[in-house]
Amino acid sequence: MNSAAELEQERIKKNVLSRMKRIEGQVRGIQRMIDDGKECEDILVQVRAVRSALQSANKLILKRYMLRCYAETMEDGEHHPDSLDKFINVLTGFLEG
Image (cartoon, helix red, strand yellow):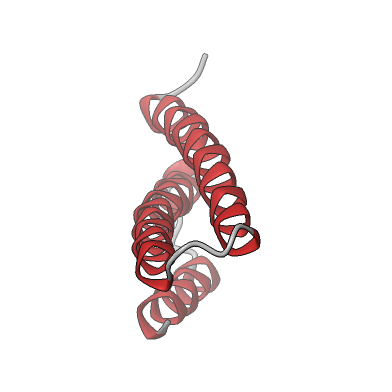
């Protein structure tokens, strides 16, 4: 039986994959705009939209990772400092950039 955390992780995974497919389409659209010689301003608007979409996806991916780390830590009721250190490294890497 799946726990609530596992179901949430799966929901987030599907959401992220959907977003990535949409982003892929946006990037292809930008490539076409460049090939077609569209105005730089229009291209930059689309690049900003892709960047924003990626940031939203990043947040969801991080949330899914947090849920997984939490579930693993709580699985056997023992403290896992290595898991916490790994999570902190991922989180700080995300925040830095």
